[in-house]
Amino acid sequence: MVASPMEKRAPPSTRGNKRQPYAPCEDAPCGTLVPVPRRPAARRRAAAMRRCVAAVLVAGLAALPAACSSPMDDIKLNPHPTQRYELIATVDAPGAFDSVEGFLSYDVTNVECVPKDPVAGARNVPNTNRSFVLTRVDAHTWKGSFYRDLLEDEDYFGLGVCHWDIGTVSPGFVVHGQTFGPGLMLPMVLSDQPFRRYFSKADYFNRSNNDMNAGVALERPSHDEEVRKHPDRFFHIEVQARKVVP
Image (spheres, rainbow, N blue to C red):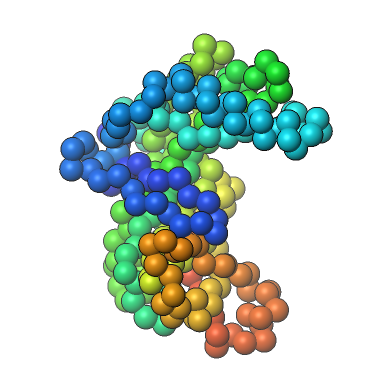
């Protein structure tokens, strides 16, 4: 089995900040890293490590054992991924969306494969983001698939094999420049249980967002006080991930 053509690199994103436009796939197959003219990988990692060290030093000596994290571009794809999962998203929204797509983050799980900074002792642990296609199957349901083992475990730093795993997986329902969708951490992905979050209808209808200030909508649990008091002001998105048996 080869890497799914649906899975492609996605831009880094931070909760509360807008997602940057993701790279087009006209010049390379989706699922591959599109080369862009940048500094060599070693210099980029070194620069990121310096930024991490500076942040740690500002935070104080108590933060020294903490690991830093940064995007990594020279990551190899697993030529034969086997751990395929299906994401099912059920939405009870007050209207349509401008776009729908799935998003993934991958992290190195064994940080000892990453070198420590000689001054601060922090590790600049690599991560990467990807996206995958979500297809509408009925009025309220979208489905898509992704691979847990999409990335290849390898000795990237000469300190032993780095092992990749999913950090989060989330649907991204975008309307008026704002993204709606609960994120599943790896334990939730493995639990095979549905996960529901509530979103404000006022946020859905807010047209003040644009490409300059678009962001990620606030999600609320079912026991949230506002949700319990005013259920008519919210809509829900329910997400479930389950492993696909070959």
